[in-house]
Length: 69
Image 1 (cartoon, helix red, strand yellow):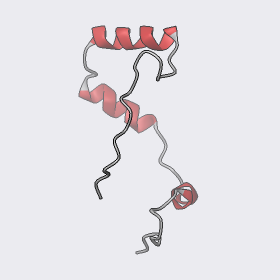
Image 2: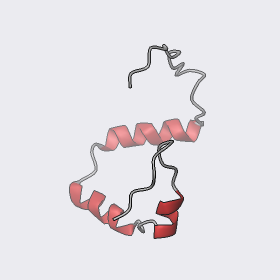
Image 3: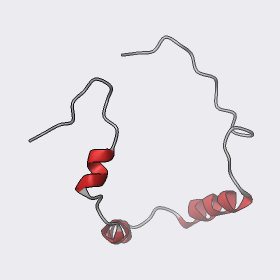
Image 4: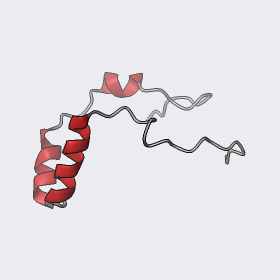
């Protein structure tokens, strides 16, 4: 459902909690270019999938029952 309420514009100078290290990391990433696909896939392979308990603990939309097979 669309919302009729207008949100405040994001103040990039004050509204984002960033450190100087964050800014430097973003600049380094911008200069290095896009991550090659194989490198990205290797990175994803390092991540472990969430357990079933973690997935079940995630919030569901209000009034909706969790999906069951």
